[in-house]
Length: 135
Image (cartoon, rainbow, N blue to C red; front, side):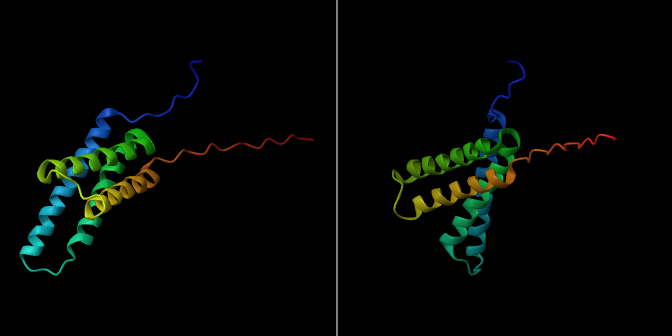
């Protein structure tokens, strides 16, 4: 029984660090977008924010995927999406699910799924030796 493989669960530290990284990347990007708009740079507001949300979720998910695999990446992106929803509820007392709020959460989920697929370490293939019998 000691040789059985156990499922790889995400470490709590990697999950929390991945979510904090995602929130930090997102806040830094929002500040950069606001500065660019204040300087008069031509930007599409919601599309830039949606891509930034996916990139932040991807960054946090890739960090968490190292410690917990696919489930770690999804967990970090879920915590990031919940933090966005909590911020929306705290500031505006509602989240517009059918408007831009729901789409941002879908972009965050997409970034987490992409991080889970691309950020998980690949299993090394073991080479099988072919033995031939000398005649």
